[in-house]
Image 1 (cartoon, rainbow, N blue to C red):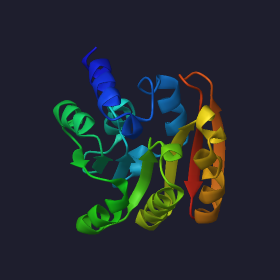
Image 2: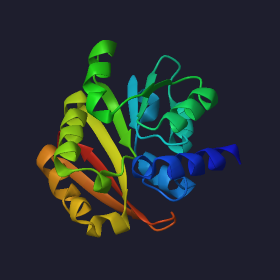
Image 3: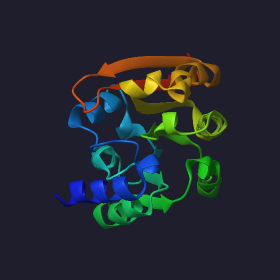
Image 4: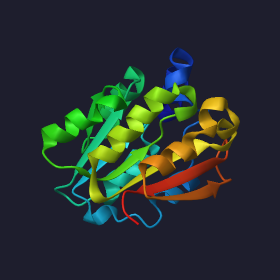
Length: 192
């Protein structure tokens, strides 16, 4: 219940940084984690973790010495995550600064997940974040993100698949109807 109250509080105070009407469903999280080898990862990043629905699933599957780095711009979400998830580094910052944290750790990420509502961002900012994501991944790393289906008809949201295909060599798309609202999951990699 606290998880939902935190979500609503964050949504009403900063609606453009929340980008959702309810927390992500288990179906969406499971779809994002399909065919992902979390158990082998040394470094995993989550951008826009919200109340940590996906974060908790990631944390449970990571090996003991793996690093889980979560970055969110919403201070309400960050405070909540710091109280709820103890085996992750939770940072209050913008995803554009991801590379700074990756450089600080000394190694690129195996996996990067994102719940950032790209359709609410100016295109240049979305492109900058996605370029930073690409540069922060290992050569064989994967980037997994979701976007709500309705956001793909928004002028800013329409171009997200095009931008992903410009930045990554391999982009796969899956639909998740068991989420409110329904969503697309994009799984991207730098190599074929």
